[in-house]
Image 1 (cartoon, rainbow, N blue to C red):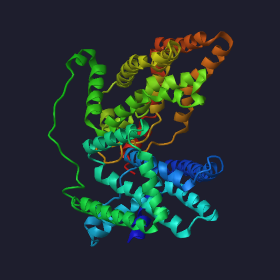
Image 2: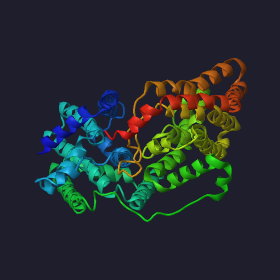
Image 3: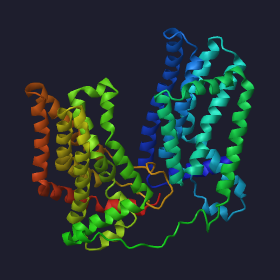
Image 4: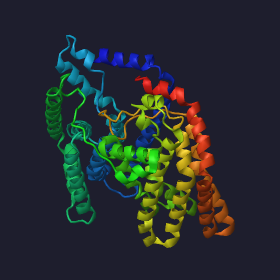
Length: 488
């Protein structure tokens, strides 16, 4: 039955009207997966031979010491990015198929996700190297099984707590507290990790504990899903009492104020858009990479980081215009909606948040006013230029975003479009190139001023640029409507 369900999903993929886009995305995703597979396999070689040859320590012990950190990172990554097991279940519930079979299929499907098995590339490679270097076969096998099952447990933990944000926040705080205790050497967390995971090698029968824990959590997950596996309960759309909200002072700005009002309500009410807000907040800390990697300490990369620190909301929210409105976009197009005011509302909202980010980025002045002024110039460029190019790229965005879906907040797919990709050049490469060139010949102050001047020029000519953007939205209008109506 598992393979029958899998064949149905494959047929659905090839019969969908968006086959070309999906296939292109699959190819790029496959290339990315190959890259990470090679990195993990190479990391296993490096971890073994560097520790053994340079540090003169037992590689298995050293890797075991840091596995607790790897486990926590794996759990966080799965919570943020891994989508829940999905399948067009409703038609099968009316057929003579046992719910037990359907639920077990959904749970098994989680292991096909790249987030589930990618870390196994490191463990398989590392264990293979260990065996070739004289380590005990039973010990290595016990270590591999015990460690792998503990990492696979994260799939089930993700399912159990995916829709319980309060519990997720509590777990996140606990992980941060443990990380702090380890960092300040208050509690020897890494030593405990080494003892725990190295026991799987010294006592291979300990892997049975991981197996029992794995099967037990599988059973809990099975009961958790089985309990709500009905058309009129777990699989139906949740209905809540509607609440009327209104930000009164925005009404005096006419259609633009109304659109901004609606977008603010959307950002407050939906999990997907709340994820955008959290992601935008996290972008404020992107500049901290400068202090962890020598690559980011060059002046050209400073402007690159400034674009991200001040433009996180713009990139995350703006590139999904008008996808956030895909559910009612066809209806909106039948009304007398002024395109220019609709886009200007998005533009003003993005720039208000960008301006707020520029103020919050003032904390980087602690590391030098030169850095903050560079970030400030990048913020002006985001307001004057990138905000408009981001909206322009939205004209070619044909992906749907269902704000009521149970997909991961960062997991909903975006369509690949070469035109939107080309618009990344003025958004990212142009300011870096201008900054680097001017800074090379006239100093860093001139480079900062040149980026800021480009932003001011873009802001002054915004009306002309908006006319061009509106024209492209009108050209792409009917293909966008067709894409948003198509649920495949």
